[in-house]
Image (cartoon, rainbow, N blue to C red; front, side, top):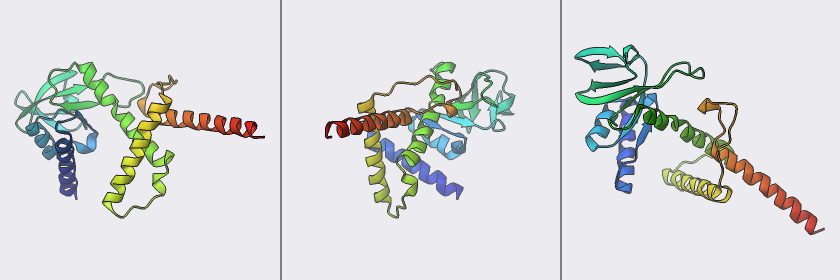
Length: 207
């Protein structure tokens, strides 16, 4: 099952590259810290940022070392014969543990790499909102092509929603990215308010 998942992931990433003609910067959660994925992306020249579990082992100064034992906040390490980098996020009262980010980006600053990974939560919020706001969780799709068409329509709708509402980032009391309101939800709620106002106004004018 794990090998099947890994194979599908690599195939999907390669297919995305082939369609675009270039590699996007790729951000992954801990579930994708797979040797085959890392090796493939490194060989292809793709820039990646993968969160590792604190107990993950890497090679430092010729010694096998747990990620959580790294003293430096930004360390060059060896993994699977590759020279990579592990960046640890700053301590925060909103996070139970720091992020350990494995990357082959050797030029960006530590703060920039942490910020790049931070935006992963926005991607997850978009998927969550897609399921709930657009009620995709109610659908049962049997054919892959049907799912692809549906997703294209949904994300086209999201793009149009953004263009129409031009949502701005709302400051909330939550600094934890998991507790902040996504721009998709902000835009959707703004659109619903304006639609309601339009219907009320139209109803008054037709009386």
